[in-house]
Image 1: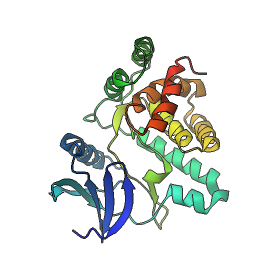
Image 2: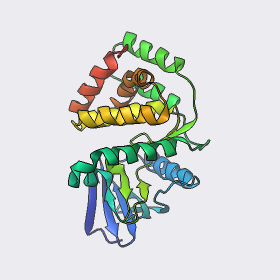
Image 3: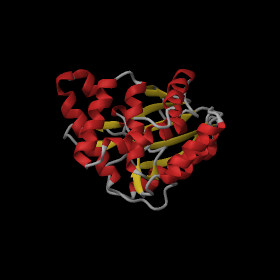
Length: 249
């Protein structure tokens, strides 16, 4: 493996390009179960007809777990938004269209979003009453089985030279309610300090999908609480503020 060219550094993992291969190297103390689960998630998503990188192998290197997949040539939607701010509206619309296509898929062997969120809420740094309220709200939400990416944001979408969109990073994919996935993307825009895009993204999604805005908003505290368990202290503080507003309007 040629690990000379770094293309991304993320939390506890480094991603390299080796010719036509993308090599994701996890830190030595990274959970083996999490690495294998990520590979399994991606392999299962390959069975849909979505355009995603195919996994080529899972191996170890110097005691570290490695996932090798196809390298997809192109620019991320985040790069394009930065390079062509005048086209931001067009890119946000494209992003919503891609996400709606993902939500149209079924993948019955994926973990259930509801189960994952219940576990995460139990671990959140919230008082018992707030956790109880969030668990109760989650149980009361409609039960769906749509594919939910879990980390859908412009940096995880590659636009190739022919204009095709390839979606990366399926480590958090589950099956569940699409509006929870939308709430997650909305909060990711906020965490990135881009509130204007968050609002426009949500407006576009609700308009294109026929989803009431209030319905997505009901998911915000649930999603914020479940996401607060990971991430840095600043993000956790922000997400816990959202999680504490159980009756968010």
